[in-house]
Length: 221
Ligand SMILES: [Cu+2]
Image 1 (tube, rainbow, N blue to C red):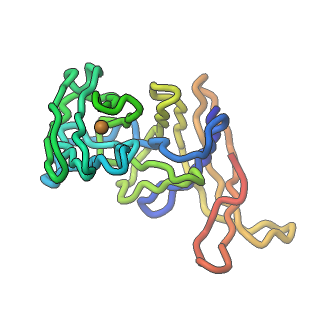
Image 2: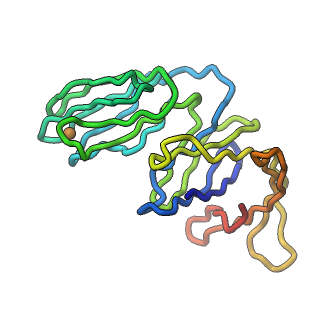
């Protein structure tokens, strides 16, 4: 159901996730499973809006401890509640346009957000151990910025699977090199550790996009 690749460059982990059997590849949370802390909880609250009868964003990853502000932007009453233990099964009540109610997430895991006025409304807050995470866009692209040097395990979360999966441990990254076979991009060697403990060596093909001048992944894992 999920296919993906990653590239690590100067504190940024980026890549693409492909979700098969879904309308597009958006709303996959890509996150570092465990990083050395402690991490100070941001003073700035995360935001989840209720607008056009939808929760926006649909998937919101946060560092554990973060407070989320739920704004009602619609001209109708909305409610926010969750049956998830991760969020202590809260019910914040029902409130009108322009008002905000908040909740601080103290436990790690994924919590579903629902509105008891509009049963079709649904969203997810994914509470994580560290601040290194990103959500994919419709093309499946993601980018996690400002990751300190180190060895990490990346994981994926997707609402249809409702659990964490997709371990990928990057063991090492080598020096980029040019191919002698006339390929216009270059290759970056890297090693990954498989779940059975085996190590695989791969080369990631990178090409520079003519217009944006950004490198993109042209093949590999
Ligand atoms: Cu509602």
